Image 1 (cartoon, rainbow, N blue to C red):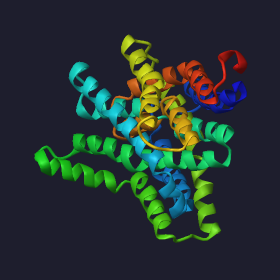
Image 2 (cartoon, one colour):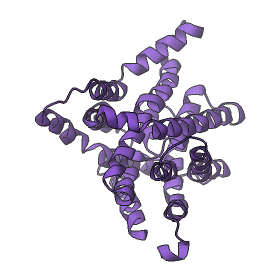
Image 3 (cartoon, one colour):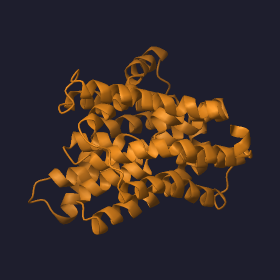
Image 4 (cartoon, rainbow, N blue to C red):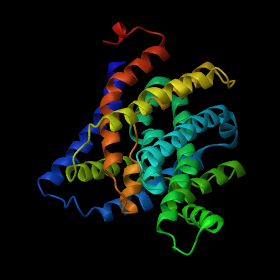
Length: 319
């Protein structure tokens, strides 16, 4: 079990530290990383999402609906709760509140989830993590992008018009279009040639590494906050979210292994989407970066407990 945790979490820290050191030593300008962010969010990540979703079969997608529904209920519930707290208690703008909410509600499926799911569930784990990535790409990302688009919309656009304009713009982003196209191909049963999928894979392989490196660069230009608010938000991500998932799997019929996968996926630390979205829209990224770092450190304990509960073993056996 400890080996599984190390394989899942140590690479995240290693790449972020590399980016942090590069920024601190001036090897790369840590205040001007927009080009690297464009590479990640408009090329590498969409390519990875398209390649992953286009490979899924119609039958596989149909079998994963309990997992998909449960993940979405948990993430959307947490997103709404954190957004309300950030907007009306902390008094952030609607867009910044959405970035913070996404940071808390969307786990790090890409960097931590893939090795964890594969190690725990084997071949089936790839199906689970694919479903999880799809849920984030086709629902959580467009939702956050709609808030960010609304912030930069024409001041004359208001009310229902602003809502439709914001949603329309968010749906045209490569990050959203790519997985939708992949899912559409899968549902239609259209298989692309291997050389085309391999081309997307080659570009998509850069996603996690570049995203984590950029995260380190950004963090090198700002301080990680350990305020009570950041600690509370990190606990929502690492503790409350998997507990909510545990409750839901008792209500939604699904195989036992799939239920275990839901809990483990929800126990993953915070992902980097919120931070990179904030960078793309020149929004305040300090909280998103702090939540990611604190949540990842905290997951050394919380993810161990989740693994122990799912595996039905004691913590003593994990050491």
